[in-house]
Structure formats: C-alpha cells, structure tokens
Amino acid sequence: MEAAADQVDRTAYATWLMRMGDNTLILGHRLSEWCGHSPVLEEDIAMANTALDLIGQTQLWLGLAGEVEGAGRTADNLAYLRDASKFRNVLMVERPNGDFGQTLMRQFLFDAWHHAMLTELLTSTEERVREIAAKALKEVSYHLERSADLVIRLGDGSEESHARMQAALDDQWAYTGELSTPDEIDTATAAAGIAPDLAKVGTVWRQTVEEVLRAATLSVPDSTFAHQGGKSGRHTEHLGYILADMQFLQRAYPGAVW
Amino acid sequence: MYAQMVKSTGEGVKDLKEMSPEERAFQERIDRGEKIEPKEWMPEGYRKTLIRQIGQHAHSEIVGQLPEGNWITRAPTLERKAILLAKVQDEAGHGLYLYCAAETLGVSRDELLEKLHSGNMKYSSIFNYPTLTWADIGAIGWLVDGAAIMNQVPLQRTSYGPYSRAMIRICKEESFHQRQGYDIMMKMAKGTPEQKEMAQDALNRFWYPSLMMFGPSDKDSVHSAQSMAWKIKINTNDELRQKFVDQTVPQAEYLGLTIPDENLAWNEEKGGYDFSEPDWSEFYEVLKGNGPCNKERLGARVKAWEDGAWFREGLMAHAEKQSAAKLAAE
Image 1 (cartoon, each protein chain N blue to C red):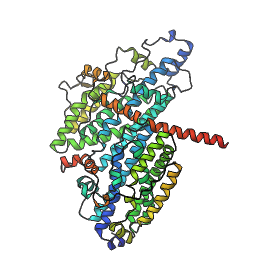
Image 2 (cartoon, rainbow over the protein chains, first blue to last red):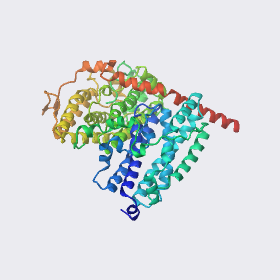
Image 3 (cartoon, each protein chain N blue to C red):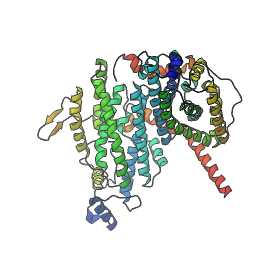
Image 4 (cartoon, chains in turn purple, blue):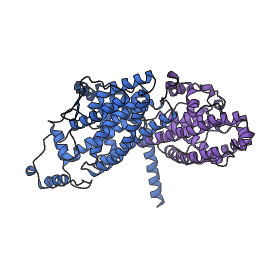
C-alpha cells in the first residue's frame, strides 16, 4: 500500500471500499430483477447493461477491499459470505424496486451521487482507487445521462407519468441524505486524501438533482429528514432477503467451485 | 431452433411453369443465390411466412430471458453473474435485431407483440420448461443455444437480406453463449457429487425438450417444402436434429454425463448416432399451452407490457410536447 493508506486505519479504508462495492453490488442485484420484465425491450437491455457495469465495479471495489483488509478474503468471499450486518451499502439501494418509475428515480438519485463521487475520486491519493474510479466513471457517465433523460421525459410526460415520478421522488427522498452524510469512516478516509469531502460531493449532487428535477417539472421535497444506518450495518428488512437469494448456492454448498 | 412449425402457404411448391412471370423471376433470383431486399417485389406468401418465422424467433429471444433471468440473482459468483447478465442482454439485443428485420416486411413490433400476448404467435417450446438448479443455466447454454446455433448457422445464407444479416450478428454471440454454458457444465460435472448430480439431472430434463426444438419430422410437410424452396429454411428438421445429436454426444461423454437414451448407439453405416425420438405428444401439449411454465412465461410478458403502458405513454406524451414546442418556435 502507498503512503496515504498507511496514514489511515486499514479497517477504515477497507470499510470505505466495502461501502463502494456493496452499493454497486446491491443496486446491481435489484436492477437484475427487472430482467425480462421491463416496459420495453430497449429498457430490458439498458437495465441488464447497467447491472452488468455495477457488478463489474463490485468486483474491483470488493477485490481491493479484500486486499486492504489483508485477511485473505476475495471479492466473492465478501459478496457471498458476509451476513447483512456486515454489509455497508446505503439503505436506498436495497429497497424493493417498486414500479419502473421508482426504479428509475432511485437510479437517477444514485447515479447523480455516484458520478459526483467518482469524479472526485479521480484525484484520490491512492492509485488503485483512481484507476477504479476512472474505469467506473466512463460507465456511470452513461448511467446518469440515461436516468436523467428518462426522469425528465417521464416527469414532463403524461399526467400519470408525472404523478408516478413525483410519488417516486417523494418516496426515495428520505433515503438520499445518507449518501452525503459523513461519519468517522468518511472523515478518516477524506483526511488521508483517499476519499473526497462528502459534503462537497453532496453539493454537486444537489445541483445535478435540482437541475434535472426542474427540467422534469418535479418538485424537490422540502423534508430534510434522512434515514441512516446502512453504512454502519444497520439495514432495512429487505437486505436479508436479497442475501438469502444471492448467497444461496455458496451457503448451501460450501467450498464448491462454480 | 427458435422457430418451430412455421406455416407457409400450405399449398405446396409451385412448379416454375405454374408461376406468374413475377413469381418466376423471384424464384430464379433465389435459385441463383441472390438476396431479396425489403423494397423489392416478393410473393405475399414469402412475406407472410418470413414474418411468422422471424417474429417467432424474436419472441423466443425475449421470452428466453425469463428462464435465465430466474438465476441471475442467485448466480454463484460475481463472474458468473456478470457473464449471465451479458448473455441475457445479448438475447434481448437479438430480439431487437429480429423485430427490426420483421419491420422491414411491413409489420410493427407492437403488432407482433400483440399477437404474442394474445396467443396468436408462438415462441420456442423450450422456454416453457423451468430452470430448477444452476446446472440448468449451463444446460441451456450448452444444449439450447447449441441447438439454436445448429439452425442459425445455415440461416446466415437465407434469401432475405435483413434476416441473413441479423443471423450473422446473432451467430457470433451465440457461440460465446454455448461456450459459457458448456463451461458451467464442466465445472459442475467435475465438481462435488451434489454438483455432478445437478448436472446430470439438468441433462436428463433438457435433453428431449432440446431435441424437440427442431420440430417434428418435416419430410412430408408442404410448409417446409415451400420454405426450403424460398431458402428461408435451409435444412430439414431431421437433418438438423441428427447433426445436433452427433455433435452433443461426444461433448456429454467428455463431461462424464449420460445422455438419457437407452437406444443411443453409433450407426457406422449412416455415420451418425441412432437415438430415440422425443415424446411428440408432450411437444404438442406444450405448444397448446400445457407446458410446465407456459402460463408463467406468457403471463410475465403480458404483465410487463401492461404494467409498462404508463411508461410508454409518458414518453410519447413528452415527445409530442417537444415537437409541439418546436413547431411553435418555428
């Protein structure tokens, strides 16, 4: 590891990496549930494509998390053999998909944060982080372009699509605050220059979100309440079911090679 | 094969002498190996048969996402999950090329989907079987995609230009799909006793449904004869089935798995295997809607379409607003 990583507690760094990888893993899982059930064929393709990108990013983030942790765990070990309380993803990504509008709204709100975060990570003090961020940013730029475009078209679409997108936004809103609320892990990794100041990421996020929602003729909810807990392992009831599904084969047939 | 029992004119193949001058010129172009392109004259029967065949193939690609999608969330490793996502995405893409090819014949994608949803068009019988274990994902890649390739490779030479070009693109991706399926089977067949049991069980359940993919023997079918004369069908169902068995048996042997057919034996004289016919009564039941998953598969597609109506209407409404605004600005 480089100098910056030595200055920060390895556990904090590994945890921060797990947050990145768990977000992409769990969101990728949720998106893959749409396979074959989207409203049009182009969306089936786009959903699978986005999920595929996120799973690819998961391999990189969790792979590095395992190396930094230094306990010999691979990306697969981390994905398949941790229980819910050890997952570090934000609550937003584990919530059920809802209708296609809710899935798209969540995607947009996440993409806007993800894009801002990865952009900042291009100047991380850690080379490996910069490399992963650079690769992921290419993919996430497209994710954001697509989800923002759809939010605008559906928000400023028919009466029903507008109402559904507003309801989706209202429903997701209380889960967005967690993305940009720093805790001691964020502060420690930011101090070491590995990760950015989350408040700065939150400001960029807010600008993107306001701009797109305005074009979509949707109203930003005034509530500032934010559910917290995912980043420290206190999850919703939904994550357990995701893991029961995702980890089934690894749990039922320990040690088998697939 | 993703198109089964496609009906043609039902009238048998006309002799060149019985044809109108236009029909004769058309048939002669096909006989010379020329490609027919969208704007060119074609007999109505040729157009309709192609729409049925390409449409059925397209529907098979999109319904085919469902049995594999059933295991994406449970894929055993991140790499397997990524590969399966890529494969299912390819299949949706194949659906897209094929609907586009069908559209060049004057039918819209929405019209074709309406026919699928109302039960007036079919998709391949194979997708009405369930995927019960992870080995089924291997078996689908190995056997189902293997059978599809058997049919699609010759169709790259089909007479209709857009269909032929779609097949060329699709075949490239299908061979990757088959390899990933075989690779899953290999890992499982060489794995723990439980994994090997799953692999054998998947082969047992998918073997005969895979043979059915080629359709019943068409040696006396007037539909097939006409389609072959038009080069929208290149080989008979029996030829393709034989080729598939001959290719697959050594692969199963290499895996150490047993083909569930006591009558399977090498026939030196014909240079191919003798094998048992699948139970055709089961095939006809599946086509009638009585397969194990017909209701779920079609139900899932209809639900996706109906639940997504607001999404499609919302996008249309936005597009209309944009064009109205553009018009007002001019």
